[in-house]
Image 1 (cartoon, rainbow, N blue to C red):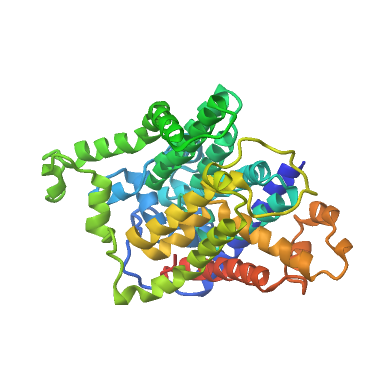
Image 2 (cartoon, rainbow, N blue to C red; image 1 turned 120 degrees about the vertical axis):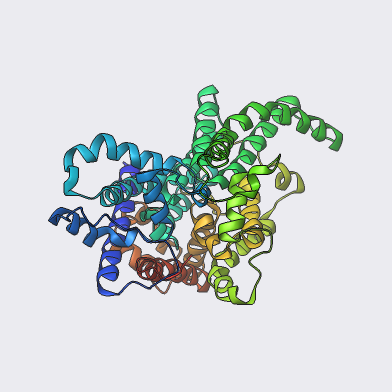
Length: 475
């Protein structure tokens, strides 16, 4: 019952973004950005169905969505497209060929059909990812209230436009949260296999999914330590078991990394063959070359500290709230550590989940997630277009939702004169209603941190939707 309500609330939020995008896209003229635009064949007449779909959804086909649409329609016909992993465009292409094209035919342009499929697909993937995040949060935090507020914040996250637009964020969140859930205390072989499959698909969606191997290694190490000894472990024993874990990790790592390796091999064969070269490619002559990194460096100027230029200061400002949120979450977790042992390895044991357990941000089971968000933050600040940090972390890490949920609940508890005002039953019964969300989150019970978090999430959701749908630069 709870999962159906979560899915419904997630879909409501996506529909709200869709309506806002439609309004902004049709009322505000597009910015003439220095970006690729889709050009339709003028010989194909536009039907009223095509025009209606574009009226409703065209704001979702901007910036990188243009590249995904092009790949789905025409394949990888230029080296710069190798920056985009193949799973999403492949799925769009297959749905179009087997389901949509036979119905609409030439009444709807290929690009419009792909836009319709992508929007529907991403809304569905977002709803599934919200359910998975709720289950993951409930399993890790062992508190239903925290899990519910976490998934609520996820549904209004600051990268909301990218969760509905023809981007990979929703699909990636679905795969990564699903894999994290499977690898969180897996109890049988099926859990290991499903978790590995989810992480493998995540890598096929986005290359930064490779970092998810860390969750596998961490879980295997914990299991090895748990089965090896019930007493205190010395440093040399931990090192010994860590080496064993690396051996155990190899088959999982090979499986998870295989989509990336196969796609790089495809890129080399496709564009380093003299008969298919569209331009001279220096990386084709290198013995060890990864096309993805070469393309990112050449066409997007991505590399270590390459973004540290005076003209990029506005983009650093744009990313500052998410970076600050991550730093505060990490700092809070460090402050809540109970012991060096727990902080290093986490807990071997689960406790029974409950809405009445003490709400704390120092759960040892969160350790690997803290390391994950720390790595993403450092990597985003040093080796990416820094403004992308917002959507990178919003679709990759549950930590920011756990921290904002914790801050909101603690603020309400501390500011309530009567402890009975913090009624858990009300939270469980009314959380999925927009009016109750407005009443609870925007009430005078919120402290400064909680109110600031809600304002940040909603402001970036609304402004981001308006500016992105009109080809203005955003995150």
